[in-house]
Length: 107
Image (cartoon, rainbow, N blue to C red; front, side, top):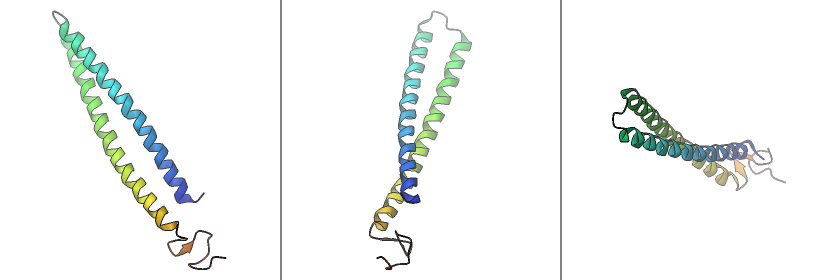
C-alpha cells in the first residue's frame, strides 16, 4: 500500500471517528435539553443550575462548530487525496510510476 493510500485510509478512519463524535455531541445536546426542561419545571430553579446549564450548552455548541469545521476540512483533504490516487492509478504519480521508476519505465 502506498503512502498516499495509507493517508487516504487514515483520513477515512478519522472521518468515521468524527461521525461517532457527532453522535455523542447530539446526545449531549439532548441531555442538555432534558436538564433545561427539568430545571424550568422547578418552582424556583436555582440560578446556579441555570448558569451551569447555559455554560454547558455554549460549550457543546462550540464543540459542534469545531467538529463541523474539522469534518469539512478533512472531507476536502480526503477528496484531494482520492483524486490524486485516481489520477495516479493510471500508472504514474508526479512523474514516477507506481513501481518506483521514472515515467514510462514500467516492465
